[in-house]
Length: 283
Ligand SMILES: [Zn+2]
Image (tube, rainbow, N blue to C red; front, side):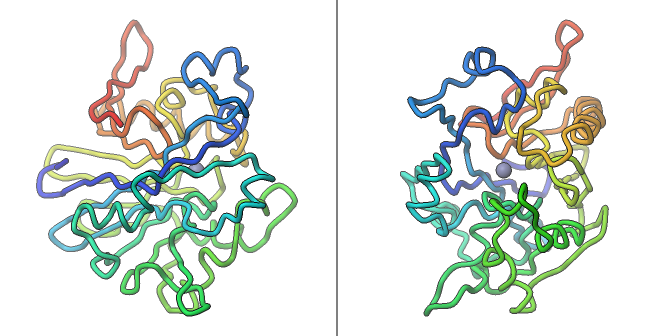
Protein backbone atom coordinates (compact mmCIF):
# COMPACT_ATOMS: atom_id res chain seq x y z
CA UNK A 1 0.00 0.00 0.00
CA UNK A 2 1.22 3.48 -0.78
CA UNK A 3 0.26 6.97 0.19
CA UNK A 4 2.22 9.27 -2.10
CA UNK A 5 5.94 8.49 -1.54
CA UNK A 6 5.31 6.52 1.65
CA UNK A 7 5.01 2.75 1.54
CA UNK A 8 2.81 1.11 4.21
CA UNK A 9 3.24 -2.63 4.76
CA UNK A 10 1.10 -4.43 7.36
CA UNK A 11 3.06 -7.12 9.24
CA UNK A 12 1.89 -9.75 11.71
CA UNK A 13 3.06 -11.46 14.87
CA UNK A 14 0.22 -14.01 14.64
CA UNK A 15 -3.12 -14.10 16.39
CA UNK A 16 -3.81 -14.29 20.11
CA UNK A 17 -7.03 -15.88 21.33
CA UNK A 18 -8.21 -14.07 24.49
CA UNK A 19 -11.31 -14.04 26.65
CA UNK A 20 -13.91 -12.02 24.71
CA UNK A 21 -15.03 -10.15 27.83
CA UNK A 22 -11.70 -8.31 27.86
CA UNK A 23 -11.95 -6.72 24.45
CA UNK A 24 -15.68 -6.01 24.60
CA UNK A 25 -15.98 -4.80 28.20
CA UNK A 26 -19.57 -3.98 29.15
CA UNK A 27 -21.04 -5.02 25.81
CA UNK A 28 -23.13 -8.16 26.49
CA UNK A 29 -21.81 -11.37 25.00
CA UNK A 30 -25.16 -11.94 23.30
CA UNK A 31 -24.43 -8.76 21.32
CA UNK A 32 -20.70 -9.09 20.58
CA UNK A 33 -20.79 -12.76 19.63
CA UNK A 34 -22.97 -11.82 16.67
CA UNK A 35 -20.08 -9.86 15.14
CA UNK A 36 -17.22 -11.99 16.48
CA UNK A 37 -18.00 -15.57 17.55
CA UNK A 38 -15.86 -17.10 20.31
CA UNK A 39 -14.39 -20.58 20.72
CA UNK A 40 -15.42 -23.18 23.33
CA UNK A 41 -13.33 -21.33 25.97
CA UNK A 42 -15.02 -17.96 25.34
CA UNK A 43 -11.94 -16.77 23.44
CA UNK A 44 -11.95 -14.46 20.43
CA UNK A 45 -9.19 -14.04 17.84
CA UNK A 46 -7.17 -10.84 18.16
CA UNK A 47 -4.70 -10.14 15.38
CA UNK A 48 -1.24 -8.96 16.45
CA UNK A 49 -0.57 -6.58 13.62
CA UNK A 50 2.13 -3.99 13.14
CA UNK A 51 3.05 -1.70 10.28
CA UNK A 52 6.22 -0.96 8.36
CA UNK A 53 6.39 2.62 7.12
CA UNK A 54 9.00 3.15 4.44
CA UNK A 55 9.71 6.79 3.80
CA UNK A 56 12.59 8.21 1.75
CA UNK A 57 14.30 8.96 5.11
CA UNK A 58 13.72 5.88 7.22
CA UNK A 59 12.33 2.41 7.70
CA UNK A 60 9.93 2.59 10.63
CA UNK A 61 8.25 -0.31 12.42
CA UNK A 62 5.09 0.36 14.41
CA UNK A 63 4.65 -2.14 17.31
CA UNK A 64 6.50 -5.38 17.95
CA UNK A 65 3.71 -7.83 18.83
CA UNK A 66 3.89 -10.35 21.62
CA UNK A 67 7.35 -11.85 21.22
CA UNK A 68 8.29 -15.14 22.82
CA UNK A 69 7.81 -14.55 26.51
CA UNK A 70 4.55 -16.32 27.23
CA UNK A 71 5.18 -19.57 29.06
CA UNK A 72 2.62 -22.41 28.83
CA UNK A 73 1.75 -21.72 32.51
CA UNK A 74 1.00 -18.03 31.80
CA UNK A 75 -1.06 -18.98 28.75
CA UNK A 76 -3.13 -21.45 30.78
CA UNK A 77 -3.62 -19.02 33.68
CA UNK A 78 -4.81 -16.26 31.33
CA UNK A 79 -6.89 -18.49 29.01
CA UNK A 80 -4.69 -17.43 26.09
CA UNK A 81 -3.75 -19.27 22.92
CA UNK A 82 -1.17 -17.95 20.48
CA UNK A 83 -1.50 -18.94 16.84
CA UNK A 84 1.41 -18.37 14.44
CA UNK A 85 1.00 -20.37 11.25
CA UNK A 86 3.49 -18.13 9.41
CA UNK A 87 6.00 -17.57 12.21
CA UNK A 88 6.47 -14.48 14.31
CA UNK A 89 6.98 -10.81 13.55
CA UNK A 90 10.54 -11.11 12.23
CA UNK A 91 9.37 -13.75 9.72
CA UNK A 92 6.63 -11.39 8.59
CA UNK A 93 9.19 -8.61 8.14
CA UNK A 94 11.42 -10.88 6.08
CA UNK A 95 8.48 -11.67 3.75
CA UNK A 96 8.76 -7.97 2.83
CA UNK A 97 12.57 -8.23 2.54
CA UNK A 98 13.06 -6.25 5.75
CA UNK A 99 15.62 -7.62 8.20
CA UNK A 100 15.87 -6.51 11.86
CA UNK A 101 19.02 -4.57 10.88
CA UNK A 102 17.07 -2.50 8.36
CA UNK A 103 14.75 -0.95 10.96
CA UNK A 104 15.78 2.60 11.90
CA UNK A 105 12.92 3.47 14.22
CA UNK A 106 10.42 1.46 16.27
CA UNK A 107 7.29 3.27 17.43
CA UNK A 108 5.48 1.72 20.40
CA UNK A 109 1.93 2.98 20.97
CA UNK A 110 2.18 1.78 24.58
CA UNK A 111 4.04 -0.91 26.53
CA UNK A 112 1.38 -3.60 27.10
CA UNK A 113 2.86 -7.02 26.43
CA UNK A 114 0.97 -7.61 23.16
CA UNK A 115 2.52 -4.41 21.74
CA UNK A 116 6.05 -4.37 23.13
CA UNK A 117 6.79 -8.09 23.62
CA UNK A 118 8.78 -8.50 20.41
CA UNK A 119 10.97 -5.48 21.19
CA UNK A 120 13.56 -7.69 22.88
CA UNK A 121 14.70 -11.25 22.38
CA UNK A 122 16.94 -13.71 24.21
CA UNK A 123 20.44 -14.05 22.76
CA UNK A 124 23.16 -15.96 24.66
CA UNK A 125 21.13 -15.88 27.85
CA UNK A 126 20.46 -12.13 27.69
CA UNK A 127 17.48 -10.02 26.68
CA UNK A 128 18.62 -7.67 23.93
CA UNK A 129 16.83 -5.35 21.47
CA UNK A 130 15.39 -7.36 18.55
CA UNK A 131 16.16 -4.45 16.22
CA UNK A 132 19.84 -3.75 16.90
CA UNK A 133 20.13 -0.35 15.16
CA UNK A 134 16.72 1.07 15.96
CA UNK A 135 15.71 3.85 18.30
CA UNK A 136 12.50 2.86 20.11
CA UNK A 137 10.10 5.77 20.70
CA UNK A 138 7.83 5.64 23.76
CA UNK A 139 5.83 8.28 25.65
CA UNK A 140 7.54 9.26 28.91
CA UNK A 141 4.19 8.98 30.71
CA UNK A 142 3.83 5.38 29.48
CA UNK A 143 7.38 4.57 30.60
CA UNK A 144 6.61 5.94 34.07
CA UNK A 145 3.39 3.97 34.39
CA UNK A 146 5.12 0.80 33.18
CA UNK A 147 7.48 1.14 36.14
CA UNK A 148 4.89 2.01 38.78
CA UNK A 149 2.72 -1.04 38.67
CA UNK A 150 -0.36 -1.78 40.69
CA UNK A 151 -2.63 -4.81 41.10
CA UNK A 152 -4.57 -3.86 37.99
CA UNK A 153 -1.65 -3.20 35.62
CA UNK A 154 1.06 -5.64 36.60
CA UNK A 155 -0.33 -8.50 34.51
CA UNK A 156 0.67 -6.86 31.22
CA UNK A 157 3.81 -4.77 31.90
CA UNK A 158 7.04 -6.77 31.89
CA UNK A 159 10.43 -5.08 32.31
CA UNK A 160 12.16 -7.57 30.02
CA UNK A 161 10.13 -6.17 27.11
CA UNK A 162 11.61 -2.69 27.40
CA UNK A 163 14.27 -2.19 30.09
CA UNK A 164 16.97 -3.71 27.82
CA UNK A 165 16.22 -0.91 25.30
CA UNK A 166 17.29 1.71 27.82
CA UNK A 167 20.34 -0.31 28.82
CA UNK A 168 21.40 -0.51 25.15
CA UNK A 169 20.95 3.26 24.65
CA UNK A 170 18.12 2.62 22.16
CA UNK A 171 15.27 4.24 24.02
CA UNK A 172 13.81 7.61 23.09
CA UNK A 173 11.26 8.98 25.52
CA UNK A 174 8.95 11.62 24.06
CA UNK A 175 6.39 13.91 25.69
CA UNK A 176 3.10 14.53 23.90
CA UNK A 177 2.71 15.10 20.16
CA UNK A 178 6.03 14.55 18.39
CA UNK A 179 7.26 14.65 14.79
CA UNK A 180 9.14 11.45 13.90
CA UNK A 181 10.16 12.21 10.34
CA UNK A 182 8.73 14.00 7.29
CA UNK A 183 5.04 13.01 7.19
CA UNK A 184 5.05 10.78 10.29
CA UNK A 185 4.04 12.00 13.73
CA UNK A 186 3.02 10.63 17.11
CA UNK A 187 -0.12 11.97 18.74
CA UNK A 188 -1.23 11.46 22.35
CA UNK A 189 -4.45 9.47 22.59
CA UNK A 190 -5.06 8.75 26.29
CA UNK A 191 -7.67 6.40 27.70
CA UNK A 192 -6.57 2.85 26.99
CA UNK A 193 -3.47 3.86 28.94
CA UNK A 194 -2.52 7.34 30.09
CA UNK A 195 0.57 7.33 27.86
CA UNK A 196 -1.10 5.86 24.78
CA UNK A 197 -0.02 7.38 21.45
CA UNK A 198 -1.11 6.78 17.86
CA UNK A 199 0.74 7.24 14.57
CA UNK A 200 -0.43 9.73 11.94
CA UNK A 201 1.02 9.52 8.43
CA UNK A 202 0.50 12.31 5.91
CA UNK A 203 1.83 12.33 2.40
CA UNK A 204 0.58 14.52 -0.42
CA UNK A 205 -3.18 14.80 0.02
CA UNK A 206 -3.48 11.44 1.77
CA UNK A 207 -3.65 10.53 5.42
CA UNK A 208 -3.32 7.23 7.25
CA UNK A 209 -3.54 6.49 10.97
CA UNK A 210 -2.42 3.54 13.06
CA UNK A 211 -5.00 3.54 15.85
CA UNK A 212 -3.45 1.04 18.26
CA UNK A 213 -5.73 0.19 21.17
CA UNK A 214 -7.88 3.31 20.86
CA UNK A 215 -10.09 0.84 18.95
CA UNK A 216 -9.08 -2.84 18.88
CA UNK A 217 -11.60 -3.63 16.16
CA UNK A 218 -13.41 -1.57 13.54
CA UNK A 219 -16.69 -1.85 15.51
CA UNK A 220 -15.09 0.15 18.32
CA UNK A 221 -14.47 3.26 16.21
CA UNK A 222 -17.96 2.99 14.71
CA UNK A 223 -19.50 2.90 18.21
CA UNK A 224 -18.22 5.17 20.99
CA UNK A 225 -19.70 3.08 23.84
CA UNK A 226 -17.84 -0.06 22.79
CA UNK A 227 -14.66 0.22 24.85
CA UNK A 228 -12.58 -2.61 26.21
CA UNK A 229 -12.31 -3.77 29.82
CA UNK A 230 -8.54 -3.33 29.47
CA UNK A 231 -8.89 0.47 29.20
CA UNK A 232 -7.39 2.15 32.27
CA UNK A 233 -9.72 5.10 31.80
CA UNK A 234 -12.64 4.15 29.52
CA UNK A 235 -14.39 7.54 29.78
CA UNK A 236 -11.25 9.30 28.53
CA UNK A 237 -10.96 6.78 25.72
CA UNK A 238 -14.53 7.55 24.67
CA UNK A 239 -13.57 11.25 24.39
CA UNK A 240 -10.42 10.31 22.47
CA UNK A 241 -12.56 8.23 20.10
CA UNK A 242 -15.11 11.04 19.71
CA UNK A 243 -12.33 13.37 18.52
CA UNK A 244 -10.76 10.84 16.15
CA UNK A 245 -14.07 9.60 14.75
CA UNK A 246 -14.75 13.03 13.28
CA UNK A 247 -11.12 13.71 12.35
CA UNK A 248 -10.75 10.40 10.48
CA UNK A 249 -14.08 10.72 8.75
CA UNK A 250 -13.51 14.36 7.69
CA UNK A 251 -10.22 13.43 6.06
CA UNK A 252 -11.27 10.04 4.74
CA UNK A 253 -8.08 8.74 6.34
CA UNK A 254 -6.93 5.19 5.89
CA UNK A 255 -7.25 3.57 9.33
CA UNK A 256 -5.08 0.61 10.33
CA UNK A 257 -6.58 -1.76 12.92
CA UNK A 258 -4.17 -3.67 15.08
CA UNK A 259 -6.32 -6.44 16.55
CA UNK A 260 -9.18 -6.70 14.02
CA UNK A 261 -9.38 -10.25 12.65
CA UNK A 262 -11.26 -9.14 9.51
CA UNK A 263 -10.27 -5.58 8.58
CA UNK A 264 -6.60 -4.61 8.25
CA UNK A 265 -7.40 -1.12 7.02
CA UNK A 266 -10.54 0.83 6.23
CA UNK A 267 -12.14 4.25 5.92
CA UNK A 268 -14.74 5.74 8.21
CA UNK A 269 -17.80 6.86 6.26
CA UNK A 270 -21.24 8.01 7.35
CA UNK A 271 -24.29 6.03 6.39
CA UNK A 272 -27.82 6.86 7.61
CA UNK A 273 -26.31 9.30 10.13
CA UNK A 274 -24.04 6.62 11.58
CA UNK A 275 -20.35 6.03 11.30
CA UNK A 276 -19.40 2.91 9.39
CA UNK A 277 -16.09 1.38 8.38
CA UNK A 278 -15.67 0.63 4.72
CA UNK A 279 -12.92 -2.01 4.47
CA UNK A 280 -10.05 -1.14 2.13
CA UNK A 281 -7.82 -4.10 2.98
CA UNK A 282 -9.29 -7.30 4.44
CA UNK A 283 -7.41 -9.94 6.41
ZN1 LIG B 1 -3.48 -4.53 22.51
